[in-house]
Length: 241
Image 1 (cartoon, helix red, strand yellow):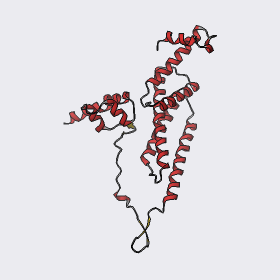
Image 2 (tube, helix red, strand yellow):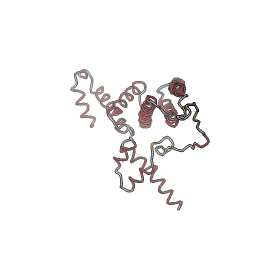
Image 3 (cartoon, one colour):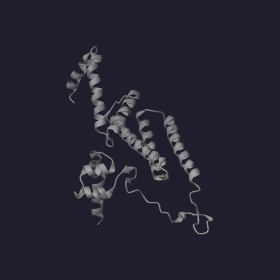
Image 4 (tube, one colour):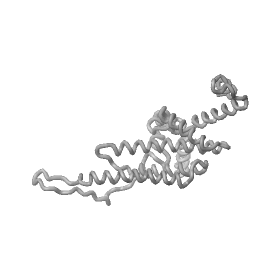
């Protein structure tokens, strides 16, 4: 929105009737700044997430002012990470509420990584002290650890079964040496990324909107990873041949 148009709208509000022209301009610039940050968020795709992002932005701007474009970009990155963090936490809570919950260790690792990134960005913006945020991370991990231990305590007898023939009890044991750790196909490091989906988009089989819907991200995010990751990988593969 144009600055002068926004100033005119603000001037018509009763609570701003006593403000000077300079104060109105400052207020209008602050609102435009907020709108710009929210408009450039990558992971904000639902009304609930937009409300969550707006509340975060207000909270952070009340704690610290932004002095440069770099700080605005850092704050945008922080809010993006906070949105993904919220998704991961909701996913974990849903998993733990199931009748036979699995313990998604990869998602716990993802939670730790995202929390670490959020801490670093907050420190860069001077929003919170390192000690305070590390305590918050520790509290989150402690809660999840307690849930995992509670699940084990309540289900540790689930591998004891009764033989239908002789009625005797015996245990089913899992040999962990046959388990193989595999990297998730939905992440590249800590970035949401799936090459087969990007292949379908590149070959015009799926639209950008459909790929964004599957990955749970915005159209802008698909454009970003396509231009900055997928095409670079494609070029490297061609050079290797």
